[in-house]
Image (cartoon, rainbow, N blue to C red):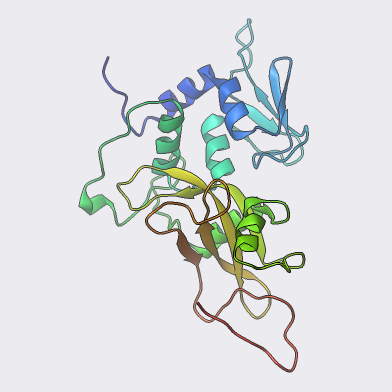
Length: 250
């Protein structure tokens, strides 16, 4: 059998649809099955019933497995869109790599060096988009959850930091995308997410610290800390500034 092209979105979507319930149980684990649908709050795996994914096609040919709609927002798509939104991926190559990993398909050969300077946006046009922009940072922040009771809190406690209840600039993402370089496979690790803001409080970037799966150390990856977005002149802020302001680094 000939291996499928790495960029064949239609074939990937079809294969995911054939395993729609397994996809939902993996990426939308906070939901549950109800008849022929998987119900969950949204694409970010929030508990609820707003988003519904069709698990099997209808016998009369109406409705296709893997199609989903969020009744609260009007969002809709296929299971590739679920993976993209759930993990906060912008580059279709990353979405395809993750889908192939889930389906246990061979990963494509590394891109030629001439192709590594740009990434292809998810969708049918090939307009390059940066994956480390301020918009991408805000998107990752929106998909993250409060830190209390998570591995991020465990990690900070292991560093002898105990006053953690009023830190709105810190959040947690349970499956934050990580790739060592352009040719490395996609991984997901839990991560502490810190918001970088400007003087008006607008998020311009984030710092990511990938964590071990027990939360007691950093993840065993080459670069467990990275920043993304517009950082120059901005900062991660704790508390409100008054007459005295302290700034720390390292």
